[in-house]
Length: 117
Image (cartoon, rainbow, N blue to C red; front, top):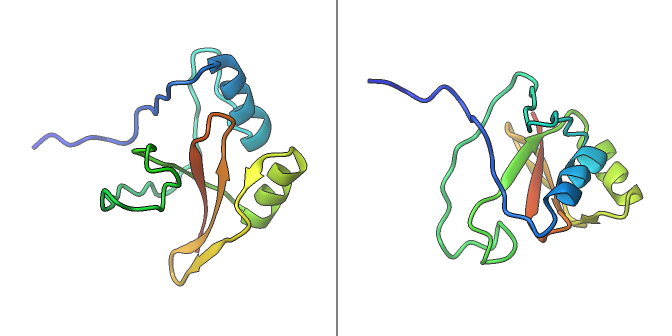
């Protein structure tokens, strides 16, 4: 059986695509080139489904949530707050999995940040 090899892309609608791309670059350090190509660091990628009524993604209108691996969650959250980003006050620790925090991008998309255990 043929299998997928990994995530090939993540595509988002935006009222202002250039501004949203700049936010991901300036606030999260996502250094994609002019074609959108980004070479991510090696590591795990989680593929999980959630109940349709979950509040985990923030707004019920949001059907998917992007999760980024980070090296230092506290440093990333502090960096985002310093840039005026909408950062959730709470974080979550999951034994054996890691730590989680959340930020909402300028278009209203909740993004999860994960520091693996």
